[in-house]
Length: 217
Image 1 (cartoon, rainbow, N blue to C red):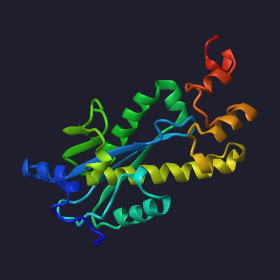
Image 2 (cartoon, one colour):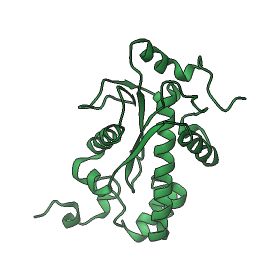
Image 3 (spheres, rainbow, N blue to C red):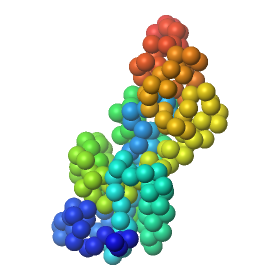
Image 4 (cartoon, one colour):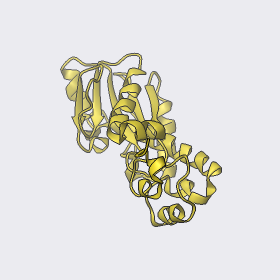
């Protein structure tokens, strides 16, 4: 099997269609970390040059950690590829909520690219994007650009959570990456939340005092 997608591959269908409409620099945008109880949300933007050979990529959720890392190396090795990974902090999430933080982080990733004329966004539309955009439900399985972004966002966030595990080893962040697994919930019950937990998320919020919840002033 070739390590690159064929020009007529279904994963490049959206990109091919947009190029027939006059767009050249098409960026895919995806996020990782909307659902966990701890850690940031991260959004990546990836734009392959119009004439690039696009590496064989897949939805990051459908491949192993080793495969994701191999795909990341292949993406970054493409000559002229533009990419950026933006971070929405736990503090941002608790201040604005996860949806607003997710949108702001996707916007930041898009703005960091130097040359773009169209955006393919995984999932729902994101308001106020700086370029024409199309939201694609399940886009990481339908667009190579979005799939590449999903790989960069997922690997970056996983590495962040592994580092966070060194600060707070009692929670097992390196294993579950902050998601609400049985092991994570048991650790929360035993040790209580740490600064890396999202105070606005249930069940973390229910473990906080009213002062910590911000309900008393």
